[in-house]
Amino acid sequence: MDATLHRVNKALVDNQDVTAPPFLRTQVTLRRSIIFTTTNTQNNIIYEDYTTIIADALTYYGKCEKVKIGKCFSQFLLHGVPTHLPLPDISNSIATNNPQLIQCQMPRWLTPADRREQKATSTIVMTLSVSTKKADIGRHYLTICNRECQLDDYISYGRSTQCWNCQGYGHPAALCKNPSRCTVCTDAHETKDHPCTIPACKRGPTCTHPPICCANCDAPHKTSDPNCPTHIKIRSFNNYTNMMATTTQGDAPMAVMTE
Image (tube, rainbow, N blue to C red; front, side, top):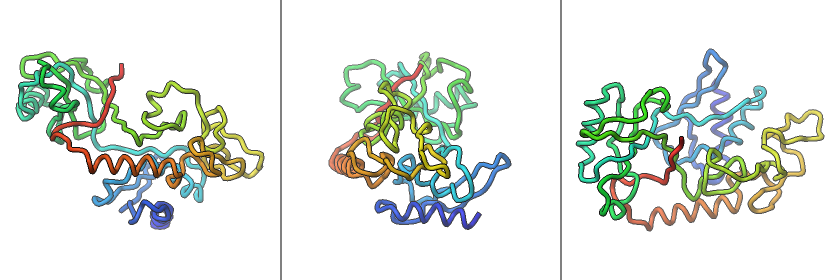
């Protein structure tokens, strides 16, 4: 697995905005899945931007069915939390009333302080230390400081989030209502269904044969290419606004409710 670790790290470092090998270790599970462990210094990398590059690097060993960015935590929304309550009190109440839910950080408000000033209740983001789903918790409400607060899934996204359905920016594929566009050729089909006339080609997102076109800038590269001028422009703007903006401690990224 040393060769696999080196190959994937090299593929990522060859991109201009990844300056150091991001993965520290790799291992194979009994189900033939390959798990890469990141170093503690690579938290700034948005790995979703590089899933195609990782998959391409792994095709040396055979077909890579899917690249999934795993998380060792889960986040949920809790609606109807009284705004006058301090966050430590909210955290303690969650722990006391729901000891099976292990928090790995202090809860945070979903909206900025100025948007909560005139509200009696608002929404917090609860972060648990394990990867779990709402169905696993088995409840629609949690009791917080003697209030029943609605539990919802949390989906974070921002200006630089790229949709792998329509290839646009500003929303995830889970919320996309636009027609599908291929990341390889921009035609109206899902990327996994991308065709190719070359017999030896594995087709789909790993295809490297013309026609290749970006859905965002019309250049002859895949829409998933992290070096796309549109992608770099949006990421640069996002980084600039993050540096210039003054945020309130406890604010969370944008999120939506899911049923």
